[in-house]
Image (cartoon, rainbow, N blue to C red; front, side, top):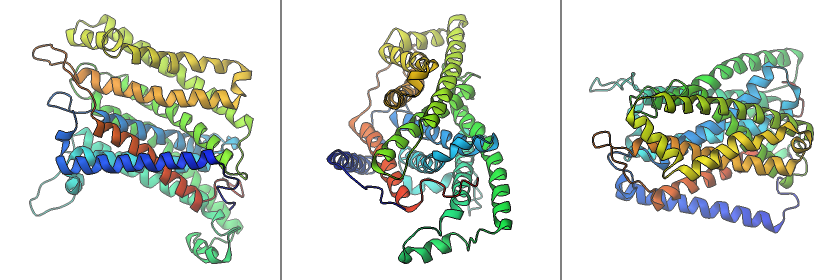
Length: 411
């Protein structure tokens, strides 16, 4: 494997310095959280979910495009996926790990997080299987294990190739004695198809279950059947944007990793399609606000579009629903710089959209109909920044261990 930092430039030293600084900010925010408890955040009895849960939903969503590119496109026999499959698969695993750490902070006493795991205990107590939070545990755990297994099987033929002698023995053991026989290739292809079928179902089910955290509640603004559609489409939408950004960064840092304009054009078409799906979900939600007689629903609508979050809502509409329409034109689809800029804006916009979705219904006191105050604390922002630093660092380390492109294109 070629050295990832082949011809490194000063801007990359600056980039990794910023990553280390973000990780330090995250660690310091973690220390304050564990020392002082969740009272150090600005969440309260009404706004019980703040930046933490918003970031959790964001990272879970990022992982969905990795599965989409790896599994769904494999079943559809789209051979162009090979150029970015490994990047998207690693992105999926790392984003799920990042998301999985966030609820541990929200528990407050993270050392008791094992209580969420259903296991026989001396008190004969079991978790509440009717709780969507318990559904999250099963869905995300199965999704992570399946994604790791799919990636490991996919990378198996490449683990004992083109490595130095000092590493070859280790990689040969990891490759489970892969010899490349016809029988092994046949079983390898069959197993990938089976796992791809499983992961395709998980693409829809996992983020639908995350949306049920909100949809099955009776809180106005969350209690909506459009949530699963909105969450799944938004997850793949933001994940594809992250795939574009990561692929572009690795291209600049690794001379042996190249992604063709043809693949970027395919990604921009999918982003355009998902933008149209999000637009449909948004207008369905808008119709609900206009037709409902629920006073709280109308108050939430006013907060989103005419009150505190009006600027954010306008930004989200412009970026998620209008800007991707540039990809109707071929010259924009084939312009890598424009695609990266739009993808970066999409990531920002999707995080803000989830922030508004989570916070706006909680800001209304259902007894007095008053709009309550909530402003994220420095610690909450610190954990958000730290999660990005942790994601990039873990992803970078993963790219040093595993090959970024399939040497056989056998999948």
